[in-house]
Image (spheres, rainbow, N blue to C red):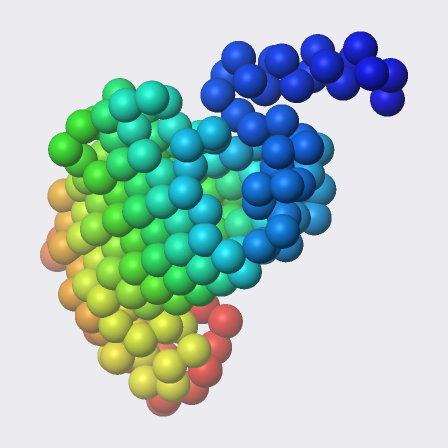
Length: 213
């Protein structure tokens, strides 16, 4: 790429608050696995741990009033967008899987953070916004629009006993103001309702390691 074109691209990134490609390589790739530095957009003030894997076309950004903090060993598949604005905050622990089919985390309200524990899965087009507390081992599977929800902490999806896993939302549709404790799931196609909550063993009556919740 000609030097003048590269300079223009770098300036475009800087103007929107993102690291340049060289800065991505120097600051991020040294401690993480970055498969395509040219398509990875990382906000200048984002705090990134180590051992994370970033696939192509991932965006992680925060404005001057907001924060994004990411721990270690997470996977970010293509078409993930994490965005903190207007005083919003995103905090992510360790060993989570984000994406595989797309994901949006949109923290756009001061005092309404998105917090995610360890070893969870959030994928297949999930959109998480507003206040959200997603405990360790929790899962959001499918194009679910999550607003003001709490998923209880538990073991990861690899736990043989489903009733020991973190809380789960799966299906498609809006899920608002819901509380799903450990070992429980709300599955819906359309608006999610608290009354539809069931134990995860209802869907998996014999303990087994499976690919879903």
